[in-house]
Length: 145
Image 1: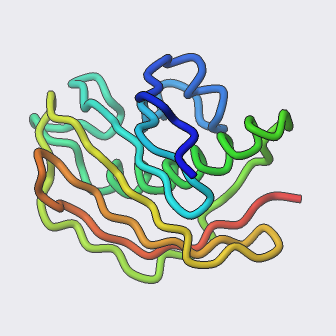
Image 2: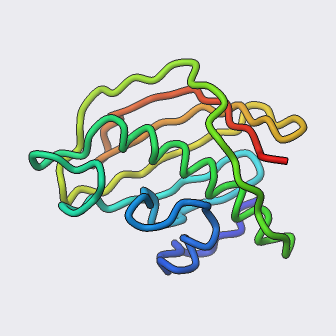
């Protein structure tokens, strides 16, 4: 069920759903949410931590992926009126950076939840920029106790 009727772009609301704080925030929009999937957005700015020589670098794309998973957790806990736990990247099974996006472009990151058991979540991730897939990953995240 999609509980996001229109994109959520309120920066302070989004930042309250994830453990990261500025300047380490790599998501700024919630486009879609269901128990099995989330789609986030992120407009790349020159002052972003991972921007260099006009491009958003690979580590920033990986962090964007992980923060999209965190956004899924944070929003699901928000819907239950509970405080979200902190999570960590447990492992990255594979990550492929196909193309680096430029400053000023917007990322659209889709995360599909493959398994979620006892605080360990296995996900498949695609990052799009201007309709083109630019990065892929499979990641395992773990919630802190």
